Length: 316
Image 1 (cartoon, helix red, strand yellow):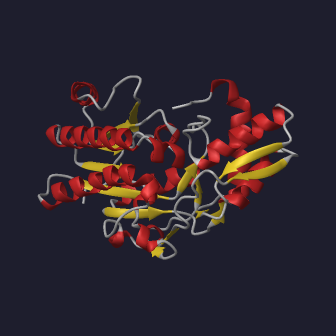
Image 2 (cartoon, helix red, strand yellow):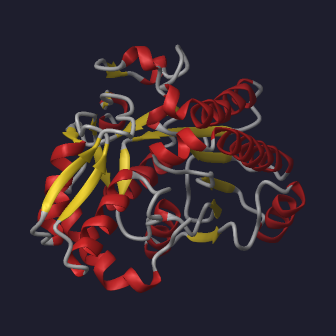
C-alpha cells in the first residue's frame, strides 16, 4: 500500500481548524511539503472551488479533515445542514482526488457515528457501519459514514489507498470556541474562564454529566495520524487514550485548570447524548503508538493557550 513519503505533495483540507493547523505545523517541522486550506479560501461545498484547490496544489497525498462540525446542541438542532454540507464536502474532495491521481488519502471520520446499540461495549472498527447511530447526531454520523463507504468502494477498484480515522474527543490549541456550537472541552473551557474573569458564582453544564468520553489531546492525535500515514495502515482505525471520563468529572478538571472558584450546576433541559464510547485500540497500538498526555496535562496546556489567545479565538 502507498504510504506517506518525504517527496509527497500534501494537501490538508480543513487546514485552519484544530486538527489541520496542528497537523500542518507538525508535518512541516518533520520536513514534509504540506499545504493547508480552510473554508475562507475554498468553500468545499462548491465543486468549482474544490477543482481550483486541486489544480493549484497538485497533491499526491490528501489529509481530508474538512467538515461541518459541532457539539451535541448544534448536531441535534441543525441536522439537515450537517448532513448536506458534509456530503457535498466529502464527495467533491474524494472525487477530485481520484481525478487528480491522488495515491493516498487520510480521511477523518468520527467516533460519534458508531452504532447506538454498541453503547457500553468496546468499539471495534469492523462494527462501525453495523447499526443506527445516536439520534442526537445521526445526520452528521450518516454523512461521515458515507465518506468511508465511498473510499471503500474506490479501494475495491484499486483507485485509491486510504486510512479512515475514528478519533476520540480531540481537544487542544486552535479549537472552535463558539459559545454554543463548540465541542464539550472548548465549550467548557470558555465558559469557566469567562466565569472566572467575570466574577460569576456558577457555571452551568449541559445534561446530567453522566455521559463518558475518551478525551485525546491534539498533540497525541497528530502523532498518531502521521505514524498511520507513514506506516500505510489501511481501512478504519480508532485513535484514543483508552481512558473514559464522565462529563461531570471533566467539568471539575476544567474548573481546576481554569482556577474558577465557583459552583458547577447541571442544566437538565439539555440532552446527555450517547452514554459511553470505549474504543478498541489493537490496530493503532500494533504500529507502536500510545497517548503520552494525561487529561490533566492536556487541559492545563489548552487552558493556558486559550487564556493567551482568547481575544483572537476561532468561533466556527
